[in-house]
Amino acid sequence: MTVRIAIAGCSGRMGRMLIEAVVNSADCQLHGALDRPGSPTLGQDASGFLGHSSGVLVTDDLHAALKGADVLIDFTQPEGTLAHLAVCRELGVKAVIGTTGFDAAQKALIGEHARHIGIMMAPNMSIGVNVVLRLLDMAARSLNEGYDIEIIEAHHRHKVDAPSGTALQMGEVVAAALGRDLKECAVYGREGVTGERDPSTIGFATVRGGDIVGDHTVLFAGTGERIEISHKSSSRVTYAQGSLRAARFLATHPAGLYDMSDVLGLPR
Image (cartoon, rainbow, N blue to C red; front, side, top):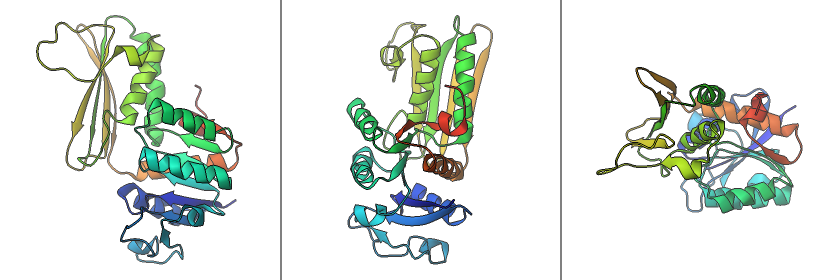
């Protein structure tokens, strides 16, 4: 079975990585390539940067890019992703969403779209990161007393949201394992005289700089020992390959809202 894939934000760093992954895949076909209005790439061959022609031209016409596609892969911005999903729903195209930074209302709207089309949404498409999430659940349940929990993440200078979606998901996994609500126990910044650390909190620290692809560490700091569970990305290739795996999964599954646990067959 060949999965016909459209890619949003095709001229960005992640978009180009996705195009390369699709072009080099034996069972996926590049079907559409979307970019923002006014982009200098409009009208160009989507895989031209690789030195060969795919026959797919970059467009800002959502219907033209999505019509006939099986799956859209979208790593753009929340507002753009929601606009794309509305057309996906209209045309019956499934969607893999790697975009982060959605608020509660936007997430609810995605859930509504998922009643009509298959959507796989995850803040991190890396297979390794999603295995780490399972490890964090296990660690938090075992280290549920006497350990302070801090989440440290680092990304490139161009990332616009903080903390990262992956860091927040890690926090949600840890909080759930401890029976807490992350909204109530998260601390996103410390400055000045803050007083002693509240042991029920989960702290976040954010680093932005250079071309860091994505580093995440969850620190369990106890008395006399520290446990660190880390994942470090050296290339966006892992996100692209995870996205294709998600697209293959969606191609054979009905409408619904899925995550990478479903794709990888991991217990929730």
